Each structure stands twice: as structure tokens, then as C-alpha cells.
Image (cartoon, rainbow, N blue to C red; front, top):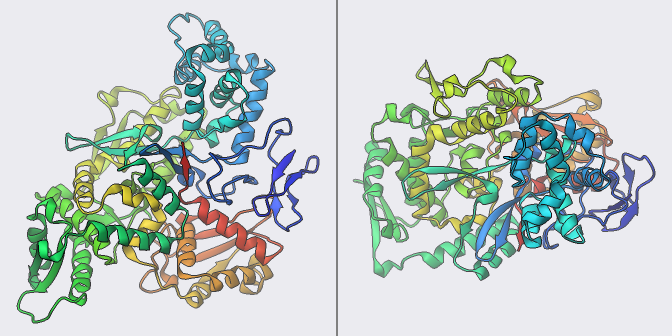
Amino acid sequence: MRVRCPRCATVLEAPPNARVFQCRCGIHLAPPSNISSRALPTFGDGKESDVLSGLSLAGNALRNVNVGNWRRRVVGDKLGWRKLFTEQDEALVMDAEEAVMEGIVEDALSTLPPVELKQKLARLGIDTRSCVEKRDLVQKAIDATNELSKIYQEPDLRRKLEERGLDPTICQDQGDLAARLFAYEWSDGKTTQCIRKDGYVRVLTTGNTLMWTNAYDFLLSVSSANRAEEIWRMSSESFLTKAAWFRAEMNKIRIPWESGHVKVVVRRNNLLEDSFHRIISLPPSDMHKYFRYEFSGEPGVDAGGIAREWFGLTADASFNVDLGLFEYGGTDNVCYQISPNSGLANENHLAYFKFFGRLLGRALFEGQQIGAHLTRVFYKHLLAWPIVEGDLEFVDPEVSHSFKQIREMDDVSALCLDFTSTVSVFGDNQEIELKPGGKNIEVTNENKDEFLELRLKHLCMDRVGPQLFNLLVGFYEVVPMELLSVFDFNEIELLLCGLPKINVDDWKANTMYRGEYEALGPNHPVVRMFWDIITESNDEQRAKFLQFATGTARVPVQGFGALQGNDGNVKPFTIDAISIQDSVYPRAHTCFNRIDLPLYSSKEEMKFRMMQALQLEGVGFQIE
């Protein structure tokens, strides 16, 4: 079995039955399963970074794979989304594909319930209305490869494979393409668990509402195909380079001073209300003008200092949970999210959310920073990034855990669930139907996927839909959405809030150790290598690793000793030891501020794997 080393690009033959082996350049590799007879899979057209090409993962290596495995694709003058596949994912599909080609799938198909057979065939676009009995469905599935070749032309099959994140370039003809599409849907279940975690994107409609759409169907129009190409090129640059490009783009759309400017005069003792009335009264055409800020009754010329103070004070007042428009995120009291009950706190709340959008947009437009960090789901909405089940960890960890239980249960009807969701309105629990008549619809194995999608939609969008819509409208009146596309959801936090000044000594002093690292703690050779790498890293790399480990780049005011877990209690940063056979990458448990750090043999390999893990959390682009 052949594996391409992601560091030196050498193609190696994996030793027989070896789970992990070492390349001559020193790093450890994991062989993909049973792909010796096929070409090594590649990603897109080869324009992605070396980190993404030819990558082999040993086990479930990355934290929340279904959170970070989406990347942009460029189609002409539009930006869309596709899945990022690892070689292990490809190997799972290839195993199923070989079974399809060898005709050994009938027994497996016969074990599936009729409802699941129908669902899988429907996803492939195959009509089952003529099927009366289960054996008819089984036969229809057996003939599916030939049927797909009749239904779809070769370009259509290639597009469907690419939408699912599969590589069509290793297919020789239309029959291979059809077999590969079939294998994706009919693999042994492992593929379904690790790959079919669809993402969903919010879409602003002309009816002043948000629509929830599959990420595969989302396309963002940009000004031209050349612009899309430029955005793709910039996406591969460092964060600081992207930020400089973004600021240059903001300057291009800035209206010259002589064409008009805006004066914002506020009273300190009525700061938020004065700021709201002044900013919300402006037409969208004023949002790209120069703003000058002034505190009523105070002398001074705004040469930057007053603007910085206004943004800081206004943001602090806006995100104050006592105002009732925002609340703390589900995992700590460090990040904020929109309060579903904001309308009860302020009857004019929707106008305030449009003001908040303009405030955030103007902060980016003027290169100012705000102190309030928001939840990951909010940043994803800002970027139109796919929302997935793994994001619930940052919204409500208990609900996230319940999703996993429902997915793993043999018979979900034992939970006696229906299509409703319970919400708390100032201590009073209320039931919300997830679909018309939901309280009379039982959740079963056959409809649990629909239930979980609707619950995800409710928690991440519907319950704050009007507030989110108005905030996004206000934000995009200042910042064109296409300009944000060079950033990922971690980088947008750094852009809005700035790179934190991380005290490595404080971080190290407030770290606990588990497993093999517990006895020696910071004196363990592997732990010493880890802290050496953190110390040598720049501010951007430290911030991104902190995001990877805890979910946000923000450090509590009291320092690392005050880090909180998902239960609101102090959870110190913790490093646990795992075997290199279990994972070649560090793994993070953000709810507990804990990382699993493999027992690396060298500092070079550790640094390489850490940087890979961070880059795989971000965005990549593919040109079509």
C-alpha cells in the first residue's frame, strides 16, 4: 500500500499489516486501507497547500473533524463549499467501491430496513415508486450503478462526486464515476459516520428572513472570475498578510473626506443610546464615509485616540449581558452569543442588532478592535461558513452530548422524543414545534436525521433568526461579504478582537498534566519540546493554538488560572499523553481545555504536526 509523505512528498510502500511506520524524513505515517490497486488520491486540482495534499490520518486524529473539514470552492465568479477528504476517508469509499465492482453487496443491502433503502436511493436520484416489496428495493439498489450511468451524463457524475468531497480524477470512465457515487452512499456505515456530516449555511432572503440551506447548494456571487481567483490566491497567505490585504480593500471603497464625512457626538453618561440613535439614523450610503467621534462637552480632536475609546466603550456597553440583548456562550462567560429573549428586554431590539452589525462592520472598516469575543457559531454565520453538529459544543454542550447519544442508539424511540424543542424564557420552559404538528410526531430511527437537523437549525439559527438577520444586514452595509472570504472562522475572531498578548510563563505555570506526563510535568522531554515550540511561536501561532485547545483566543483577565470549562467551573489547561499509534496529531477537548499530545520522538515532528492540525482547522480553496 502506497502513502505519500506530506512533508517530503516521497511515495512509500507501507510495511505489511503496519498501523504506523516512519518515513526517512523522520515523521510517522499511517497507511490507508487497501488502496494498492488504485492511484493515490489527490485533492482538487493540486492548488491546495502541501499540508492538505496526500495526507494520511492515523485514527480520529483531529478534534471535531466535522467542524473543520469544509473549504471554499471557486466556480467561475462564485464561491461555494465542499468537503475536505482525508486519505482515510477516501480509503473507506474505495473499500466499498471495490465491493460494488465485485458484486458482493447484495447480502449487505438485504440487512437494511426498507426506509433506509428508499432514502439512499432517493439521495442518488433513483425513482423507487415502482418498488412494492423490500426485494424490489434491494434489486433496485443492486442495479443502481447501471441506473446512475443512464440518469446522469459524465459531467453531472463528476459534479456530484465533487459536491460530496470525493475525487473524480481517479475514475477512468462513466461506469467508474457511477460506482464511486454509489459506494459513497452504500459503504459499510463507517463512511456514513465520518463523512456524511452535512453542513448548513444561512442565506439572507429578500423577504427579510434567513433561510437554512445545504452547504453544497450555497453559492456566493463575487464581482468577477478574476476576483474569485484573487481571493483564492490571498487565502493561502498568512493571517497578517490577509489582514493587510483586507485593510487595503477597505481603503479602496472609502469615500473621500471632501465628498462628505460623518460626525458622531455622544454623551458619556448616555453613550450607548446616543451612539445607537446617531449610527442607526444614517443611510447605508454613509457607511463608507470618514467618521469623526466626539464626547459632548469635552475638548479634543479625534486623531485616532477618541475613536479607539469610543469603539471600546460602545462595544463593552453593547455586549453587557445586563442589557439583555446578548448572553454568555454555552461553554463559559468569556464569549457572547445573541440572546433568544432579547425582545423581552428591549422592544426595539431588532434595530439595536442592526446597530451592532454596523458597529462591528465599522470596527473592521476603520481597523479598530473590540474586546468582546463571540461564539464560533456567530463567526461562522458572519462568513456564511457551514454550521455542523460539532458546533453545538460551543452553543450547549449538554445538547451536543445528547446528539451523540441519539446517533449511537440502536432504538431512539426508547427516548420518547417528539419534534419539539424546550426553550427557557426567564425561567419558564416553553415547547417550540420544530415542524408543523411536531408535538404529535415521534422521533424514530427512520426520521432521527430530520429531527437532529431541525434541532440544529433551531438552536443555531431559528431561535435568534430575526436578531441575526438584522445584525448581518447592518454588518454587510459596511463590509462586502466577499472580502471576508479569505478568512476562516478562527481568523475572523483575531481580525475583530486583535492578536492576544499571551503570557507563556503564566500559561505554563497554570497547566496540569495527565497520563505519562503527570509524574514529570513540565520536565518531561516531550512536554519540554511542546513549551519550546509555544515559546518560539509568534503571536498568531500562539493565538491559533489557544483557539484550537479552548475554542477561543481570549485569555481571562485574571490569566490562565481562571480558564473555565463548559460547566462554568475553573478548568486549567491540561496536557494528556497519547500514543503515536493512536494519533499522529494533537487532539483537543475544548470543553475541558485539554489537549492529547502524542509522544513524539522529535521536536521537528511535533512542530510539523501541530502546524498541520491548525491549518486543517482553517479554509482552503479549490478552482473549478
